[in-house]
Image (cartoon, rainbow, N blue to C red; front, side, top):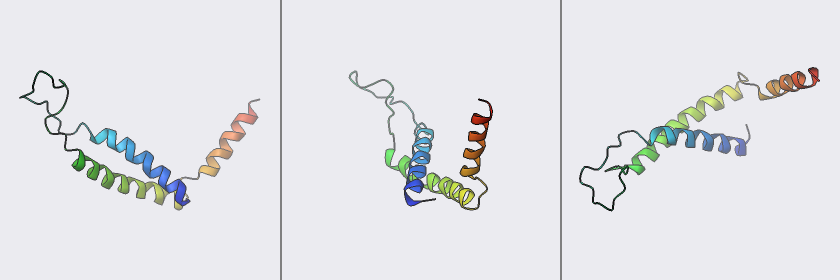
Length: 90
């Protein structure tokens, strides 16, 4: 895996993980002012959620990296198979 591909894969994993982590522990603000948004959480803890997301993303990226480098997942073979299916059905 090239450096560019590794960065792109990490960013994809990061964003998917972030959207999974963002709702954790959110509770509505009980003492809200009339001008406040109704769905805004009382304490969003964004920094903590970004750190958790970064850690989980590194672990998941490491697993994906190990699978790709050990040829458990061979994208070239998958692409060849898909090409054969496409041209074999025409």
